[in-house]
Length: 148
Image (cartoon, rainbow, N blue to C red):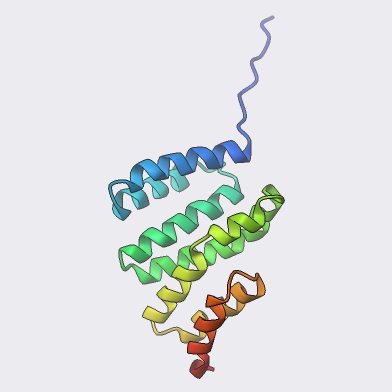
């Protein structure tokens, strides 16, 4: 009887590197091709690790903001925030650096402000401050203080 060949399984880190390489190539032509690549990847790979989905959704939020698609950007940001625990579990040693590199807080504040959801923007500022992502989030929070 023939020996069964086991499928080659990539690590979460390898899958993330593949995603980032494909995104870089697509983003070279602008936010629309980048978004198309990300959507195809998210829809076509049901077994994509949640930590990688977090990064893909973050990149999507950035592209959507560049295209002025504020509602979709807000949805992508919400998805990213939901996947942060999985991102931390998959990359415990790189989590801090990775969260600092995410655009979801910046883009989420922008999108929610554009949509008139100043309370939502303020909540994102508070969350970014709690994660110690930088003093500029305190300044943003202070500028939105009137919304309380």
